[in-house]
Image (cartoon, rainbow, N blue to C red; front, side):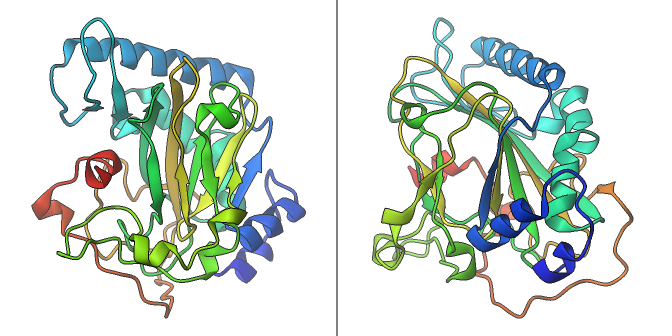
Length: 292
């Protein structure tokens, strides 16, 4: 759906002003969006999986491990395909305030796309360079949003995600190096055209939801605290947005309608999108391995 079509629909959970701000900036921070019972459950699951990673010696289809991982000190960068790891993750993605927010940003008919949980450990190992999401998983249009949940308070030193206002209406970058290898980040020669001085940190208290448009330039700094920051992320699409390349991190729920009904017609946005690698053939580790 187009932003105009979406804004013509009555909001479910957000205010109309919040929706307009999202489409103007390409991102939105929504405080106090998740009730304590959900927040406590998500936090508990994040801790449980981090602890269970002690039994893993190498990255696999569940965990993307950092270089300092050990039994004594787990170092996990990502829990993959989150909704396939525990039923409560799927319950949250498919029937919670999160899906109400997705409908406010995508229209009444919403599909689930993917999910993961990023752990940002103290230090620089989980710095995420500036990038745009849609270049990794292109669709017939750009009505897709990533919704993240702050499980704890997040401030400057925690290494929050930062977004460049208005960049979703600008250029889409190829995100490959001079040898045409996928890097998952915007090249130095291209990032010069992005006004990074305007980037906004998505800080917020526990229960805050952060929303990032699929074209928005964003990244995150190092975690300067002594605590691990866990951030579950869920991607949703308008039902009329169809993938035209394999998803890098598919789940058993990818493509499932979580609000409304399936689309009978695809919405085709005329703006071009770079072609990513064929993940079904080449495989995909994580943004951390691509940007290394």
